[in-house]
Image 1 (cartoon, rainbow over the protein chains, first blue to last red):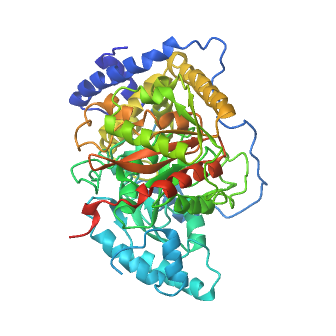
Image 2: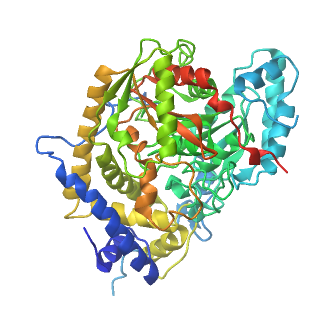
Image 3: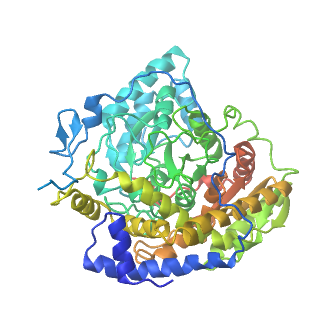
Length: 100
Length: 487
């Protein structure tokens, strides 16, 4: 299926990736070719076929629920980008509008 | 010591007969690795390697050393290593230092193996040429203006160039086997769920496996024995098989074994005559050694690529959502949180990663999910069923690993579909979760050709048996690139 720029822009928006205009242009052409190639799946009759959930025999994998040491707070913060830590918390920009 | 021994077994003999120490071996490997001219390393840690080598020598003196004790190895930089940078070949993780090691690294540490450093790769393992690394392409030691294959290109090259005795890579659609083929070494992808992935940067979770690069089939089996086995931290490991018997049948030969030759694999567009010739010669070798060759049909071979290029980017788009600039990695601040995500990811990811994120997000988005993702998972069921039927009739499959030898750097970089075709023989194996190995089967125009052997799930022992029989009969694995010798 050939796609146009708006499809790439919409998917990039959903994927939270900002693109330069030349990238949108290039990806539109390249992804059209890839999507055309995957079209051939339509030729396969899958009317009575279940989708694969796992290539392994599906079963629950359980382990004993025992307390054991995990990542320390300092280890968890070791790679935080600058300005991203506030005491014991990761700091993010606000996501809710303030009420007037 | 200027050159490393040719195998883990040879190195082990030197260490145990006191002809060389682990420290001498490590120094030789570090010297060669620092002289590397192929951009194969992202990070070498001399002090860490020397420290590990000294403790290995201590253990060797006490005489209770495991088989990998004192053996210098290289780790693909997508496998987490405590206190040692792990970038996944991406700007978005530049400077990232894990707080813990992957289980496979812990297991090699426990054996006393000596890690030299981290190897270059395609960004987040997305690529078949190692041109997608944010830190520059890797070159092929057989011909430095050609690609080494990918995504584990650095790991393949350091073994091919004699800089490390083995390496770990990851294989999602061929990322161990294809670079092994293009650089003339042994590379092996285990059965899905046989190797712990705890601590490995996730790419496409229903396909990813960790596996070894080595000089010989026996060496690959030795490494597998060390890294296989259940890990409570990995919920994909449903069954626990014994791992200590992988070398048991290495000398058993192929007499009486039934080897399947999928006819579709020789009808693929773009197959080079030199590759086909080398593989047909290999088939004749198996016949001479007493194997029974049987033509089989894997009619959905061509559809594998389409299935793969839906499932893999879809899973990757979910896995890579975690790179958001909040807890670790690059952060490019915008006026609000969503804009921070967008700018961070827009600047942090390279073009191939962005392409796949967009493709995967599109395939999973409302209105397209059934047509793409569900459809692909249904065809996947049929592909797996086809392999199941074939393995009722044969013990293993013998195929080419890649349709071409190493191609020139830049040749396919702007044509994603042509690039993806490199993996047409390897990715169906991931789709079905099977074990596969690539071993050298001669040269075409002076460049290595790889032979792929695929076995049924958990039948690595049979796979190694077939591979070892071929290696013994031909000695193609002894060919080494001339350019590897430091000037």
